[in-house]
Figure 1 (cartoon, one colour):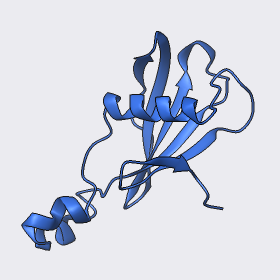
Figure 2 (cartoon, one colour):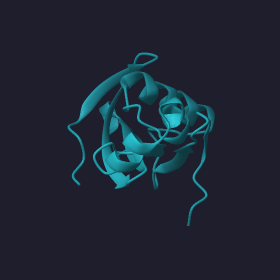
Figure 3 (cartoon, one colour):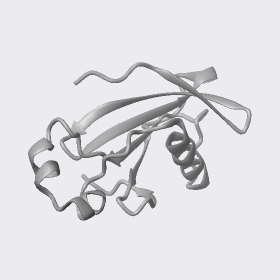
Length: 118
C-alpha cells in the first residue's frame, strides 16, 4: 500500500511534513520530517490501527461493549502526530540531525516508547 498524501503540521513554530503507510493489518507507520530540511533525521512511529476493511468480520462479531477495548479504530490525526512529535523530541529526536530515522512505537495504552523490534 502506498503512503497517504503528504500533510503539514506546525508544532511550537516548527513546520513538519507527515504521511502514513500501511504496516500490517493491525498497524500503520507515521513518518514525520522537518519541512525545512527534508534531508534531516526522520521519525517513524508504529501506530496501532485495526483496518476496518481487513478486520470487518471480527469487528462486527465482537461484543459491542468491547469493540473499543479489543480494536484500535481511531484514525491518525494531526493531534496524534503532534503528540508523537513532542514525545520524540522529549526522547532526544533531532529532526535536523543525520542518520537513520528515530523509530518509536505507540502502544495501545497511548504510551510512546522506543521500537525494540529487530
